[in-house]
Amino acid sequence: MSHLSLIKTLNFLKEERKHSDEILLESAGLVLTRGTVAEMAGGASSGKTSLMLSLLSKLTRAGEICAVVDTSNSFDPCTAFLAGVELENLLWIKCGGGIEKAFMAADYLVQAKGFGAIWLNLSGISKHELRFVPKTYWYRYRTRIKETPTILLVTAEEPVTGSASQKSFLVSRERTVWSGKGRYKLLKEFHLNLHSRKEFYGEPILTKIEFDYTDV
Amino acid sequence: MSKLYACIISGDAKKDEAVLLSIAREFSFGIEMLEDGVLFDVSGLENLIGNTKQIIRKITRQLEINYVSGNAAVADTPDTAILLARCSGEPDFAADTTDKFLQLRLRDLEIDHDAVNVFSDLGIHTIHDLQQIPREELIKRYGQEFKNVIDIIEQKGRRLLKPNVKESQASWNYQLDFPVDDFEQLIFIVNHGLDKLLAEVAYHALSTEQLDISFGLPKKLEKSYEVKTAFPTLEKTFWLKLINLRISLDPPESEIVAINIVSHFTKPRPTQKGLYAVSRPEPESLLLTVNKLKKLVGEDNVGVAVLRNQRLAEAFTLDAEKIPKGKECINLRSENSLIAFSYFNPPLPAEVYVEDKRLIFIKTPDFNARVEKYSGVWKGNSHWWNTPWETWEWDIEVENKGVYRLRKMDGKWFLAGEYD
Image 1: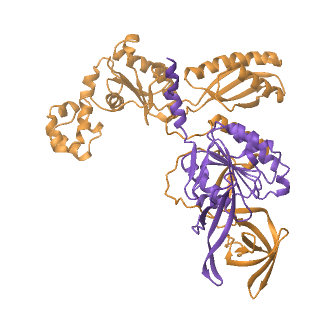
Image 2: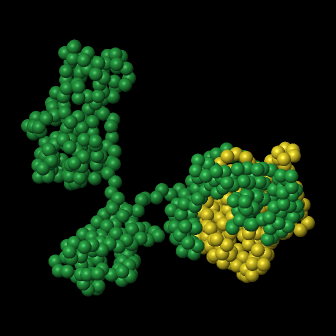
């Protein structure tokens, strides 16, 4: 009967099919893997927050519970709502600028298991402060999150996760498009450039994000 | 085995609701509370009590003991039992149930008023009279809907008993013969109470995650405690330990003369485990995590975002009472990424150089740069009915920097946040 051990049991198959391992972000053409750490780093108005919201929108609309660790209370639920995020499925943790609290909170969330995505938003934290974060934190997250359906997303002004992240992108804004002329202009869209730090010889990904003037 | 249903109709069902329920419970577990009484399943009681008349007699006896004025009836279908209880007068134990039913007036049935008048003109007054008319003729004359009435008069009503009594808690109370002031003794008695209480909860095939304990003290004083867990359990030693810790933290001021423990049932949770079930944290784990996070960052800083229907600078709030539900939503939003906004907390003070009503240059503690393009001005504050439009806003693109929201309040400039 030893040959039968090659056949996966029904339970195992069910467990395997419970969540597909990859999350496809169609708008940017990105594929992120569950159970890993993924990072998007970029300066001011680089579009990293928008891409994160797109991903959260996809997951929360499917009924998954996600969490935002808002290190410097910068999260705007109005634009999140417009981006399609189901706020009812999103746990919002305001850390009030406390970087230590943010890392502890992310640790608790990673340990809870079962979250679709945990977004550790480090935007607004100075580079100087981020350099003090021990690298071991990221390896701890990586180990904890393995074999779970959760994806840990990190956004910061510069790359921080090192080799602990499976995907790491440098996001930059190529140009800003305004509609209208003279004084009567409206912000229309950002053209972004995503450069993967893990695939050094890969082509950069070009994408655009639009402004939505719909009233919330 | 044929089914048998009993119905009690009371003159003041609201007032007698509790008594009616307790009487019904003495006979059955399948109970439906009606607007004017109670309907319950008494199938199988023939072996225990006797025939239908004896069951009615026993129910009537219970009504007398509890000083409730009402009619009781027992029949093969819920419809018949309800009709008999509603429409027959004082119980006549000698009369046969079927005979009584046939003598019921047509007005007591749910028949259109005009139809009843027509029947009356034709000399048809009772169910017995109506039964003489061929079924097909009645359906031809009054339509398919009349089938329901015919089913009722033929005692084939399709109505089912819908149990609607839901227990939400179980309690145990004890008046002590002698006041207790010794902790050991108290825990001993509570232990005994928990035994009975948890057995009762288990009897309902439920569990509990909250116990309310109140101790009666002399001079009609009371001391109450609430013990909650993050998960439902019937583990007595675990509860006893928690109660022990809770009471030692804040012991009663004087000796105890009475004990009352209430256990709140945990709502049964439907679980779906299948191929397409999305992943969510276990509710206990989520609750525990949320509480740990609240402890870490503060009670009011963890929750779910709620949008406010107001035109304010920050038209949202965080509801700390809510936790995410994991509800699946089907909405047709575009898959395109939209420009998001990120707040600066606190807003970044700025100096803005304006020339010919144009924004030219901006100085902040972080950067000094030329304003390349901008849109606005937008009046950003609501509450116009009690305050003037005080907040003016612009979207500005700063050279070699980002796109920001610039705000002017009380003559001072700030960067409220960035488009990211």
